[in-house]
Length: 412
Image 1: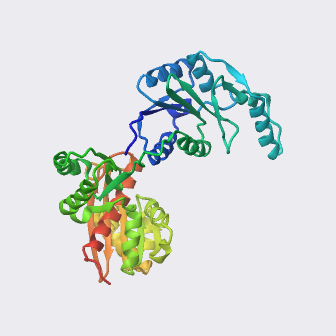
Image 2: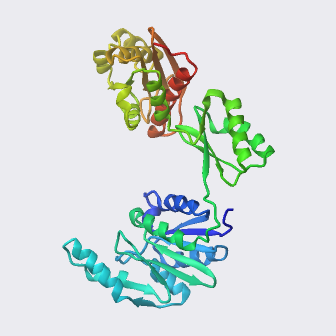
Image 3: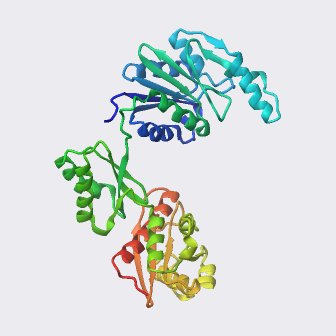
């Protein structure tokens, strides 16, 4: 059975409210799920005493276990331990044993600890020290009115092993690991998926979450859902979306494309203009891609399009670089020059400059070079910033070729 323990998390750190991505909650959610625990709420606060105390007070109203990450270092802005001690009305007590361990860790590196490091040797009175096998900041476990408050370091490399050890201490052996089942849909819009999925999910009374990205739409359902419903969802999605349905816990779109190319013994090459090499980067991120990936031609300027891919100057003068004609010629050139069976070309306006009244920002033409001298071209207008437009273009190109391959339209 699944645990009914309510777990909440407070992530402390000014940087988390600036420009850093908070990965602590991702690490904790995965580790806690294996122990049958679900994070009910996560709060991010700066290194300000009043903010930390206010968040602890609020979270303890509902949580059984409260985890705080970050702010256990030796510098003046690391005040999580001090703030919690003040809230609890407890003193900070110096531990000679912890200080000795810190000194020994520094000695192994051939350096002496500074006096500021001694700050990490103080613990909240009555707390239990949680060993940190990676860094110098020990974690702490405080019992308060039947609730558990754990302090973990913020750096992921230190947080992960400490959190894993912590779950072993709090499990009672009855919890079932909480798993997330991810149903993938390639080349679909979030609203279009929701319109069809929502009535079905309500009918079978199954909670779900839709997660959208340029690569795919994911429908997330936890293992709290009855097994027969998990199977029914897969059947429904296959019947409703056909080849757009990628299965449960599917591979990434580049992995899917690579797998099909390998299965059909096909070689691919790319011609990239507006995507600037992103497509080839994503394809070659997949281990074993050398079995099907021939190469990529990043032809940004018109002169390189002509010289490298053989795009006729007459096409560029008459239709422009961003045109179906140029995309077609680029796909043909990539396939020929790369000695490949299939190819994908990308040419467009990723912005923020370069748009015109007839060629708006986000306009992208994608060419698909196929065997037997067949080429198809598709027109899209993507939205978002430069990075987002490029991502959408690349994944749409992969999706188009995957669908052609899965439908059996591509043969040597």
